Image (cartoon, rainbow, N blue to C red; front, side, top):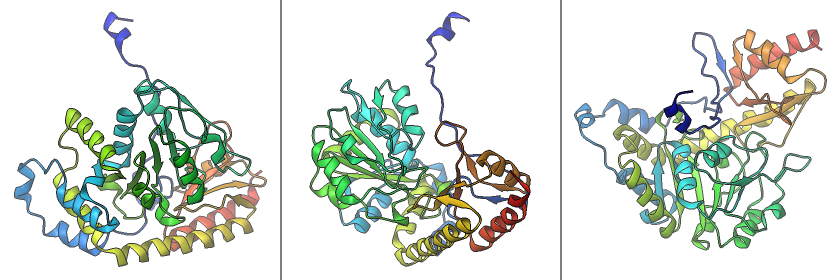
Length: 354
């Protein structure tokens, strides 16, 4: 090893879901929305002035921040935006978790959390989920350097009731509590309203799931003015121009069309509930997911084998080859037509397996 190599920061990176290329693929592995963005987004894209592309975007993303503030009925000083919720979360880890005490997040959750913690040198501990893959809120009522909760959790899909979330925040007012709500629009209540009473609470959401804009990379955090100012100070010390011009404009349009947003979410929820029944009929069991995906396991056939067979049929789902999860599959909710094709293949192939 050369001398300069010894000074390279060593981390185990997050592994994103596979992005298959080709025709006639059913992609149910990265929890994308199967429906297009709102009509206003598509109209604004067609009418976008390319002259703006030669200029730097607004570093404050004011147009988008105002749209979000109006939507959530909060001050613009309560909004922070970034390049997807990953950017917001990573910035929050860097900004808030510097006490030297371990932060807490579940042992089974979004696998980027330990990556950020390792990258920024933040110690952490991981309380175990219970036997139903649920968070035990009492595990987070102890001394720590901060709390991070995905709610609903991923990849399990389980939702922690808002009262228990507030109990955690109330108990931990000496540290920052982050509630990652990437999937909250598909079930449960958001913790946004709690930010009015707890200045240590940051709620993070994304446009990637319920707003059909994963390709634009837009995320945001809602919190007290103190939290948002701290995030902005770190952002401007690192990269002042985070969101590009199209993301700002199209993101603002997406927020305005609440009717289309609700209709799309409702369609996904209906398909999800139907999928729970169809999977049960085929011998699968799943958690009570409140997201746009299901977390399933079969009574007889190993998950790895099902994953392999589906991939041969050009149907992509997510398989986690890690302890506690290696007999489960995470299946994103697609269109009704895509789900019917998935059921058809499973009904055909499962009897031949195991």
